[in-house]
Length: 156
Image 1 (cartoon, helix red, strand yellow):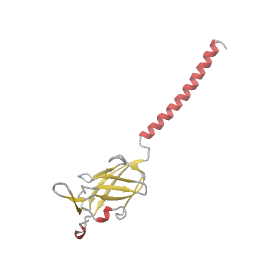
Image 2: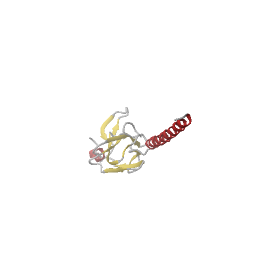
Image 3: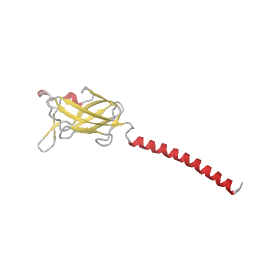
Image 4: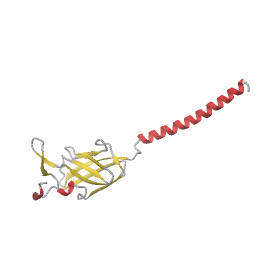
């Protein structure tokens, strides 16, 4: 094999490896892009909790629960919330969830919670709230309306 044949052989091998490398690089880049672009399994869930008169519920947290998962988002002063796996707003896996409101207590002027509920007791448990959502979209915005407690049932 003379020098020219060796050069042609090396060049062919180089281009063949280069083509394979380019294809592999493209697939790796495409996979990373899809993972980062939100094609994963998590859905951003946010919303607002109000009473039937439109007044926002400004304390507590919204719980999303199914047989495998339990997630929550803290309520803000304007009644808004966002749910996450490790932190608010991060998103949760797609699926069907039962929803409840926890820690919605009247607070003292010093900011300490009392035993008096701000909402009807049925909303405190995912078993009794009657709130269920099928979370599938990339971003889900939920408006939850809760009832105020009956005067005789204000203690928990």
